[in-house]
Length: 120
Image (tube, rainbow, N blue to C red):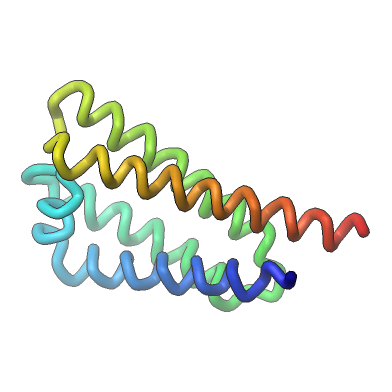
């Protein structure tokens, strides 16, 4: 299996989230459970714009996959901890944390497959 198309698809997903976060930050903040923090949604959108563009267009997707994985880990911790402390709406942020963790698992599998192609 060639992992590059999956990496590119993850990049397009990042770009989609980035566009939504930048075009409608209040809505994304609300849906993500960030309460009234549209700037947080915008900041995550800028980050995902950069990472998504790298995954969608770079010749070598490996460094961008590590950046994407780091983003997912950060999102998982941020949403779970924000929920635990009461800073975020638990009904929205915990499913978001679970989704970020699920995406991180996919990204680990893609990174491993990319490493296997390089090694073997």
